Picture (tube, rainbow, N blue to C red):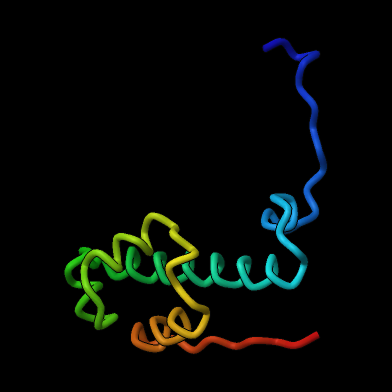
Length: 96
């Protein structure tokens, strides 16, 4: 591929909108992915193995693996808020 073959498209600010999801669904996907990233960071900051994280989150190790692999579709927003609480954190949702 040469430089002339490349087309750049400005992002909307939400990759899920850019991928074709409807705006309401894209917003939920973005919230879930951001919360998943934050939970993964909490796990990393505490130097927890997947097994240890599973114990804290009260799920199987395979669920922690799904979280680490970014499988957004496998986690509801409600479940991710619960995970954050189990990690000792609060989640605030702001309506604008």
